[in-house]
Image (tube, helix red, strand yellow):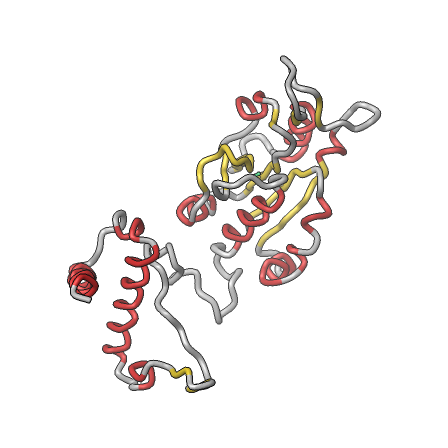
Amino acid sequence: MIRFDILSIFPEMFESPFNSSLIKKAWDRQIIDIRVHDIRHYATDKHRMTDDYPYGGGGGMVMKVEPVARALDDIVYPGGNCQVILMTPQGEPFNQSIAEDLTRFDHLVVICGHYEGIDERIREHLVDRELSIGDYVLTGGELPAMILVDAVARLVPSVLGNDESARNDTFTMGRLEHPQYTRPQEYRGWTVPDILLSGDHKKIDQWRRRKSLERTLKRRPDLLETPPLSEEDRDLLEGIRKSETSK
Ligand code: ADE
């Protein structure tokens, strides 16, 4: 069981995404536990302010430290196997290997950043890790938090049904997936490659590996630089590169 606590000033944003799909099923089956907390509840002033003007002037508002600190005091048990994450465009780029790494924890607390910025003391004293979901700026950390929870939750054993597998994922294997087809065999004249209907599993496996490498080389050549390739894949890749240059 992995527990996610999300701190947000818009907790209602999480209702719909977490109340459908495999995340909801896993929650119902108590494989994961997700709790969403309104940061505003932890604000002490009469207007329940979670932001304030920046010291030193300038535009925009800054997320206050006290409500976040008080929320964490309430949620994080000392000595627990917990990681506190801040979603921010300034964070380390989130990817599949970080998602895998996060499954080591029993408890993930995700703070959704907001406003022009956050009080730096949140970063310095309260957060273990800062993550960004990409080089673009959203209105807040809620959508990024949903992405993080989804990506981590599906790696928890038995969250995915039998029809899905986290093992052969694009990126887990360091390359993009090969093309897939299902019935019908022909639609509007668009046909399924003969080899997939041949029943020759060795050939099918080779074809899939080649297609996966071709696609990765074309769309994400950077992925081929990091993982060690098998000798067979190196030969395949060499062949693909040669046939591309002779076209
Ligand atoms: N908050 C706003 N934009 C973000 C991003 N790209 N990643 C994480 N948190 C964010």
